[in-house]
Length: 290
Image (cartoon, rainbow, N blue to C red):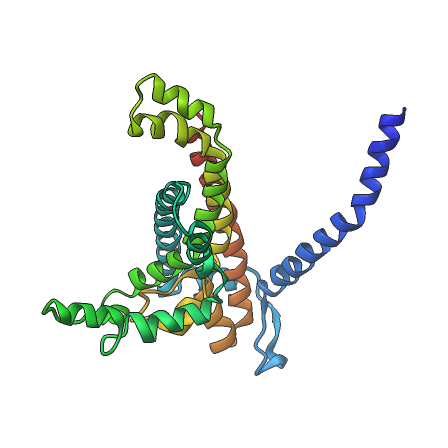
């Protein structure tokens, strides 16, 4: 009886937060869904009206749509690969005793606290600029021709900037998981003659399975909404080479003022985010929990 009362009280206390969260998510989603079936242009509001699925058809038939889907998936997949692999390597390095370990860890995670537009500006004007960037100076030092990264390799440049931002997050989560690994298990494996590679494959990697799943899930959700880095550096170009789905929605809403098509794109983005997150969770969980 007391247990039932405790559960009822707990549900009653959580109810306001749950209701607020549902309203926070459901109301904007409902408004976006409603606009996706409307022809709405803030510059000519008198021409508004219900158009059914026309906005979705127009968005699907947009020449940039398939490019945006492909670029979105490439950004998510590439950044996840770089951050997970790099996070594991950096985590293993930072888990070793070294002089100034605390300062090194702070320096490693510091890029995560830089706002995306600021990070994009730093990379665009100080690192990847073909005239006076760090990469250009390195190329000239070795007698090579500097590369105009954002013109020749726009999507790769975006991936590099976003991976640099999210690598500290993955490192922090994976380092925390590494520190929770039982030292006695490591010693037992060493006494049994297991080398570093065997210990990593059969001991460390399975222990990191849940941490990697958390990294993949959280990063996937945020990487599907990458926008500021593209706006600041390439503006979606050249052509559609670096246009992803959120940037295409931005173009429709704030440059062309086609709110209906932009809302349809937003609904498509929500569906895509749920599909990608679902399969990412299943793939990572199935492969690493074996």
